[in-house]
Image (cartoon, rainbow, N blue to C red; front, side):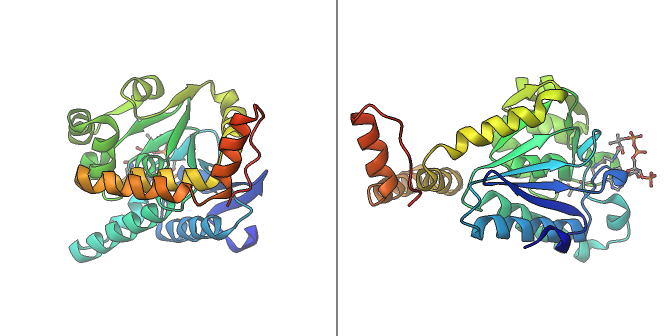
Length: 263
Ligand code: CAA
């Protein structure tokens, strides 16, 4: 799909990495329905494209990753429409989380409400030291509705999730790192470089193993441990049917660097 078909995001492929940039900087990249529809389409596109190995999600401009769902658009919804909107947001972020390839959030500024939820649907979060995080929905008489009540507690623990969601307070990148909400914090000027280097690192590994690891972790996290262990074993078993596994183990034994065929 060509970039011109998107209006609220940019979708660019460089070095087998799909860069999805939420592109409404004048609204601090707030997520309206159109932006979310485009985000969902971009996720599907990246999933289906064999030329894409890694996905990066970021925000346009210097100030915001994403400052939340679009408050103006939400302000007129009734209860039924609000629930439907939450289901739509959740479904879209699930598609991103489940696209079967590593997804990295390059958090370049405010990641609030739906923006924090978008970052949490990514598998790894790398933040600029200028970024801020939070679930400020209680300030609007709302709660997180794009998966935040669930993903936040799974990432940082229930106590910290309750603190952030009930208070609506925002935290800086250093605190987000301390509580495990982000994986790495770098000076803002280094964010792009750092994410590019991390994407290159990811691309050098076995994509079939990464897909199975994602399946085991994401599916396993939602069911009882015995069932999750069966899923892990099934995914582990499937690795033995791949050329990647033959190459990876042979390369180790022959003391050379693996060149994964990706199948
Ligand atoms: N929705 C719609 N518009 C938004 C927005 C949002 N979430 N966040 C910022 N904007 C708009 C502002 O209205 C403003 O537009 P105008 O120029 O047309 O007035 C523009 O972006 C710039 O924003 P500010 O002037 O407010 O910038 P600031 O630097 O003074 O403040 C901020 C920055 C602290 C991030 C502030 O914009 C803010 O608090 N934004 C809202 C954050 C928020 O509450 N997010 C949660 C939304 S609810 C949600 O996400 C629900 C869910 O879980 C799905």
